[in-house]
Image 1: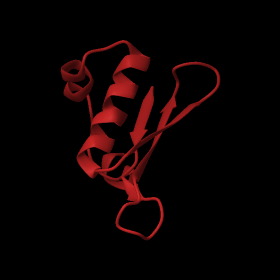
Image 2 (image 1 turned 120 degrees about the vertical axis):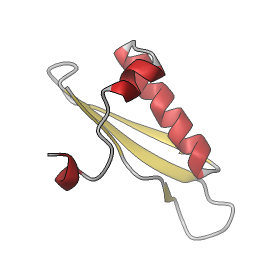
Image 3 (image 1 turned 135 degrees about the vertical axis):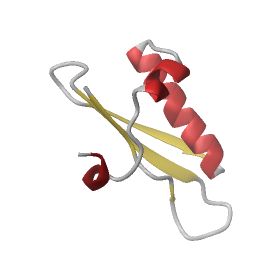
Image 4 (image 1 turned 90 degrees about the horizontal axis):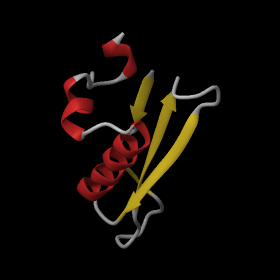
Length: 77
């Protein structure tokens, strides 16, 4: 299974625009799972993304992060 949580980016160009983070889960089922986390801050967006992934995988955050590889795909292969 391969999980990718993309770097949060602003949706628009004004100060009150929210951040969006794309999430991909491959290998959980026959079809890839694609999700988005959206929030007013970078930290909150990452928290929502991590929560969405761990709920979908039915694992705890600590267990998920214990097996995580951080960095760009080019650096983790």
